[in-house]
Image (tube, rainbow, N blue to C red; front, side):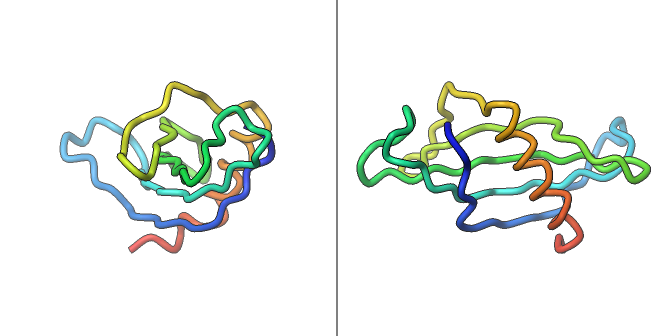
Length: 100
């Protein structure tokens, strides 16, 4: 993927019922726009990125993410490039306190 354009997002604080994981966890659903020259581009398709963000003692990190085809919810077998992952992490850092 080239430079990501995040067009929408939802964020929710999630609970760890086991208590095994230290810190807070947030789930993001990011709507993204894919440039036409990108390998993921397909006419009419929209993509989402589901991100789990961990916040522990003021340190934020991505625990897991999946790129999803919005039309059918299927997980795509692609990963983010380093700069894209950094952009997603920064976006999540800026917005996780909006979680309910």
